Image 1: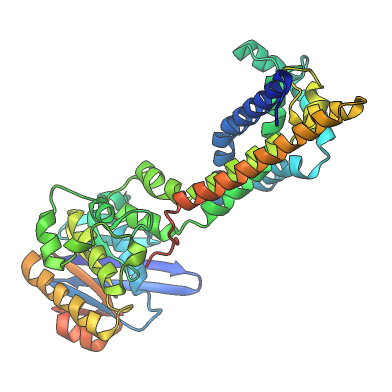
Image 2 (image 1 turned 180 degrees about the horizontal axis):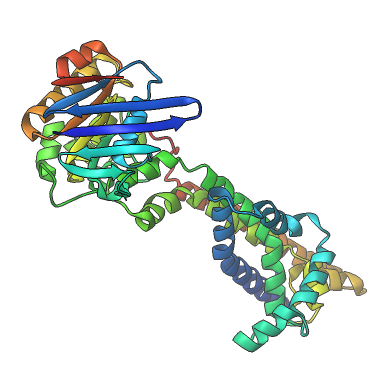
Length: 202
Length: 232
């Protein structure tokens, strides 16, 4: 079992309710905007606390309201790629990539540079990157933090079609080479059909 | 323009008083700014109002309150005397304290604004990368609020250099101890034939304030690395 999620959470007058169990590979969380997909990812990452429920990834319980378990975000080892990149603006690309560096990274630094083709960007400031470059750096930063699983929040949404294809290829390669549970949020049916091994509809 | 030894002494005293005032107020103001920007607690409105008091009440009143609290018989004055051996009455330390209190609201405001402007989502991103509370604070929150800290320091310094009312009320006009630039200018104006001294000291005051302003521009530019703070 890769992702085992049973959560209830109220934001304002909206109720997020999910019961899902997923196998290996890339699991797509699919649904219209406003369905709470990003909130689910935030709960799995530990930056949003569900009102109640249980979250386990690859057999490890990260949150269980009944048992009083709530592992802090910093210790969940989630490789979270945000929709908007969220690179740290006051650090160059190199410092961004190394921010969460962890010995257990699935790929060493040089391999990540080659894999994502970002070796030539290391001395740049995030503000000077194109959308596609920034998203690749964000993926690299997540991979180098030694994640045990990946959370991808519409990583293509801010990109033009040519850049989309580029990042899609990267994600397909990660899926093939890393053998890591991946939870992928999208509202695009074509994207989901191409990438997902399993779909959770929201 | 040539200053007399006495006048150089006044400039040096003003700088010392202002730098000590702003330096000591920095951690205090940042802590207040952080609390006001980030936390909710009972009495927050009252704390906010008290911090802003020196900005809105007449400086003479602030000076009088300082006299009551930090004077030789004031509760805090006695505490400082006993605990640290620091007394304020008629001393430059008192001038620095008055300056610090008068500068506080401006410093807190500038810092609070920049702390409120920090994108909380960047701090969350740092958390998911394994950073604990302190690392997030030191590597993300603090650097991102740096322009506000610099602005607060410069505003506070400029306010301190110009401080008059609270200081003269609290620690009077003692040459060599509390006679800072504005007080020296005022005293010189009371004496016949000191017009040239007034002119020299006034020019020095203007130059100091301009230098602080230019320095702040340069620092702010460096602090933000000539970049905008946008994420992408």
